[in-house]
Image (cartoon, rainbow, N blue to C red):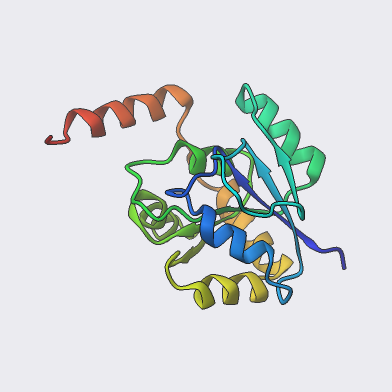
Length: 170
């Protein structure tokens, strides 16, 4: 069977899990084709084994890249909690399962829906174990859950995000 194709979508930075992602791509026990679609923060790490698309201009263009590279799964290893995560919703809008950080909205939303796998981005062996043991059958089952979700429109996402921001106390 082909190697699984896993992508990080959106801008990859240290707070989005750049260090653990870099460690994963150099782990020879993990046989995955890696992609970054959305660019990354400048750094001195070796990314020679990863296909990198520096940016995309629209959801449609992102979807085209996901289809072109035949991405099986999205990985989101944020080390700081997120309040909502548009990117998670975009992955689900494309029908793609997500392996996501247990922190903040990503972990909460994946646990709530069952539409992915949740990992602690600070525990390397936990992330590695999920990557080494996830199967195409697992991804198919998760994709089936995604197809049955009532996903928000972009306007609904913006309204939800504004509601969250308005309720924050600074």
